[in-house]
Image (tube, rainbow, N blue to C red; front, side, top):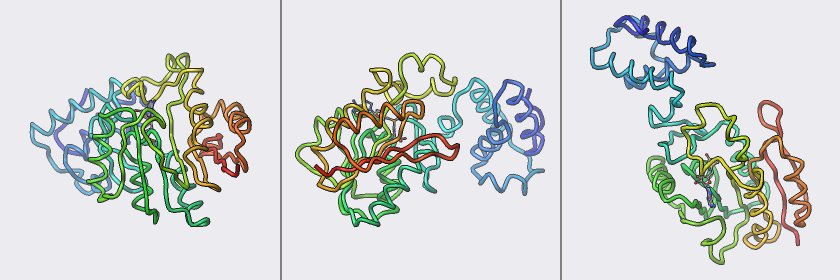
Length: 284
Ligand SMILES: C[S@@+](CC[C@H](N)C(=O)[O-])C[C@H]1O[C@@H](n2cnc3c(N)ncnc32)[C@H](O)[C@@H]1O
């Protein structure tokens, strides 16, 4: 299956093998995992194409390629994922940060700059990628990040340290239950939104991710209803709630926010043109 002892041969045979099991981007997976084994940048692989690997490196690479062929995400194999140009530690207790979620961070950075907003709560923080991205790229005075999972919060705190983002207040909380009487200018969230029915049809890779991070009762709408019902109590006047959308339920979700007296509701599309972000304001 995987042959050779130099970079070029190993990459080629790994790519062919991963393609044969149906992976959509086998070249990328083969390169990411080899650069992890060699502890080198992926972009450097072509410069060392004739380099021989040790027996230990070859057997490690074969093990990683086998795990990837069984559809374990590369980020769980390497233990790291990139988000907004920063590195985040990930394990099976946290969702792997997604490129679409970067749009959420960008939307908040823009709003915060335009309207001089200084405090933000990241609900359902997981790996901490959103809160840490905001801490690194924004000029907030007060950032809180919450999650129901203590295992996830442990990783989020490690990520804050890895990325030198020291001023985030991490809170263990079932949605708003333990947020206390604080109020924020912005509430941001990428909540779980996969219905139990949809969960059965997800790509095999997603079955490695925590079900707690993916599924929501009430046909995937539970957390949107929670946020719509509660966020007004935790937002300063003129504040913004902004969250990632389940693209196929965007109209229903918008209606939930209209029914709860939010104003200036706006939906933004992701890179593939799908509705992905909902922004709504508090004016009541
Ligand atoms: C879709 S993941 C988002 C993680 C991260 N913010 C991101 O964008 O990559 C949802 C997160 O919600 C958390 N979660 C699930 N149920 C929750 C609840 N009732 N209260 C707070 N957090 C919850 C999960 O532990 C998970 O970390």
